[in-house]
Length: 219
Length: 416
Image (cartoon, rainbow over all chains, first blue to last red; front, side, top):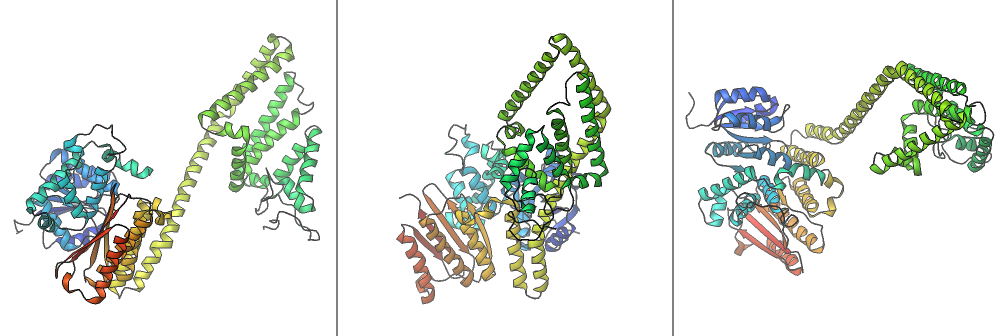
């Protein structure tokens, strides 16, 4: 009964209003296979139904989106997560990406944009909002001068010039297509740059990333 | 209630009720109160009390009594009244009184002549201080805490720093040594001091056994009470903020429900404000002392004045100087241009502070225009942006095409 081309989407959010709002916006374009309003139920149902994409609320009681990411990520590697949040505090963004989400968007995203993001996540791409790109640039640029003695793994702890370029363009509001045109590379190449940034973000042991939260709070 | 709030009595003013002073107080405000009541200088009253203290500590005792009995200016009840209004406090103070009596009797029986000289007044004052502390209002307690914390020696002993602990241990050890020495003198030899010590120890243990459970319970209740109070205060400040901002906005939104543009504008405004309150409280006060703060103001103004969404992304921050303010002014003009002419629903602003330069990118996905055929009124703006930038060594680039949006890039070098 469902179109096989439509990604199977699972919705996790503890606010009924938000869930129904999102449902109304995306129901015609994707196949919603279930929703949950708490961490425990979400983990169980996601493992059972094995959706393509989980729209995950970052802030929930009992550990929030990160708890779901960790628990599901251990057992199921095919499901991909797109984090949704009302806040775009850098602490939330960075930590949810490091926990394994493939993208991060804020809840005031428009319906068509959200559907587009879901399709891209389902296809294996990474969804970086302009703001997320800004945070990443910030995280990878600070500290190089003030911590010269820190052991740096160039493969993980630094962005290449090209990756920086791509992130800057995302931050400036360019779509992947615009970026490809601007840099005269293919959209696939843009995507691979972004995926590589995501990998660095998740695997890097950079002080700036792991201590991002506490640092930001102290300042 | 607050009748004696002025700190100096004016000659010829009608009699005022005797209240402990609030503004003109050092400790309890007793002297200040008398000064206001009698129209005498506070200093004179203080000297009288000090002189009375020389007579077997009478001054201190009187002071303590007045402190307990007189109502503090601006408050409704005296400390004694407050104590007896609360059954638990009354119990505590009563027990403290009994403990004081036991101590006196115990000291008497070990041969110390408590009844002589300063012994009695000292113990009674100690008890009175305890009663005052228990019965004092929160405001007065705060005052006393401040007072003791700022006192030269005691303040140090109250603090939790390493220095404070050392000081406390030193003072405590000194007192213990002095006490032992005194006891030693009484018996002349350690032998009788030993039995006196033993007696005191037994007494202390006895009192502990009697009162410890009850005392512990009180302490526990007090901490949970304090925690509750902190929670209530936090909640109150949260409620106050939500009321001032969110509730007001919701009301405005209800009233503007017919006008979609207004609703969006109000909601965006509130969202931005609340987000700042929640996530970056440090920028709340110093919006004008940081580059990001200045750019944030552009976001705020453009959204408010033109009803266009602004997606602002900032990387890095710096302290504004002339160049930065010029850059921001040019950026503001570019953003306003985009909001006015592009017909796009949103404008993206990206700023980056690098070691050698600061850049602002303003981009819209609106109608765009043909750079070679700019209408005169818009050329002026483009020129003014370029001119401003170049005057201070910066550059401005405009990329646009009809139907393809517009991007303005502004780059300002940082070091000369």
